[in-house]
Length: 214
Image 1 (cartoon, rainbow, N blue to C red):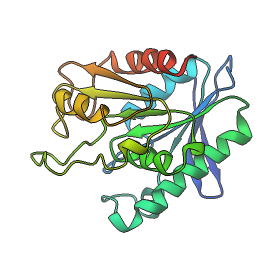
Image 2: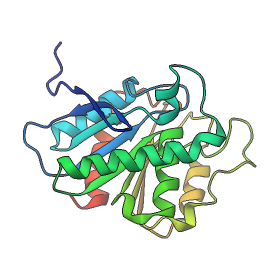
Image 3: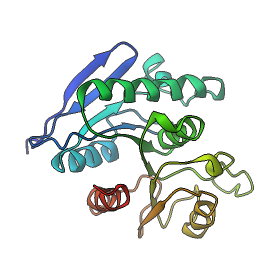
C-alpha cells in the first residue's frame, strides 16, 4: 500500500533525513530522532510521523550526527553534545519551512537528547514528544537519567510501554514529578521499548495535541 503522505529525502547543511509534507498544513512542525541502535527509518518513527502528518504537522525524521558518521553501532558519550546540536539544527531548518510552533522529540536516545537540549535551552522547541524515554539502563534502576528533568520548562508528552526494561510505568510516573512544566504520560499496555503496538501513533498524537493545546 502506498503511503498517503509519502516523505521525501531531505538534506541541508548538517541535517539529513526524510520530510513529511501534510496535505493540509497546520503550520506546526516536529523533528523526530531515532534511538541508539537505529536510524530515521525506524518503523516507530515512520508510523508516528505519518500520524502527525495526517494531523497537519510538517515532520522531519532525522539521522543524528553519530548515525550520519557511521551506519551502525551505538553513540559515544563524547558525541552526545554534537547529537544535541544536530537536533537544534533540525529545529532551525523546520523554522524555515513552517510558520507555526516547532517541537522536538524522538525514540529512546533521540528523545533523551532532545529533552537535554531543551532543558538547557527552552527556546530550542516549544514542546517535547518522548517515546520510550530511557529512564535507566535495563536492570540498573539506580542509574537514573533524570538530572535535567527539573530544568524542563516546556510541555512534554511521554509515551511508554508497560514492558519497557528501561523503566517501569511507576518509575516513569515518579520521574515526571521532577518536572514542573506540564507533562502527560501515555501508557501502552503490553508494549516493550520498541512501542510496537497499533495504538501507539494515534494515542501519541492525541495526547500531544491535548497537552500542547493544538
